Image: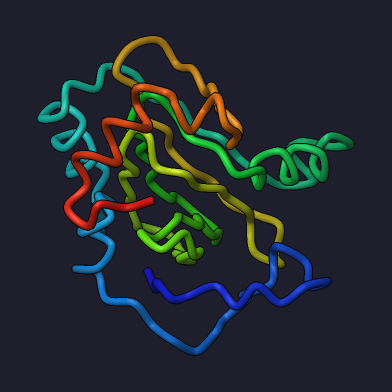
Length: 176
């Protein structure tokens, strides 16, 4: 895992690194409510899931070979800024990708993940996801109940969402 400030360079594909050269330490991610682990054994993921009361999981492969003609559309939809009303846990089984999260000053923090990286995004944090230029990632998704993935795209109504408001009031850095 590597975290850094996103460079916001216009006209560059979202799957490129967008590396500003300004790294961010893991403890800053924790201030945003983002938790990172590196697990080489899936048993460790199972233990974390049990401790957090997660009952279900699935595996998603994001690649042109697996998704066919809808790949580009899906990758673009994952990159729309959104939040979830549940925390989001992803364990990378293969490949690479980026999660971008909003800082307290509303800037993008890019988090590059690869095999054996696990990330937990708190409910209510604005974020987005994309593969890297290899166009391939395999991730385990964990769910407390039945698998669901419901993005709420950023906008005035979502800004007022109770999960968003709770995040703003509970995140240690008082994030935006």
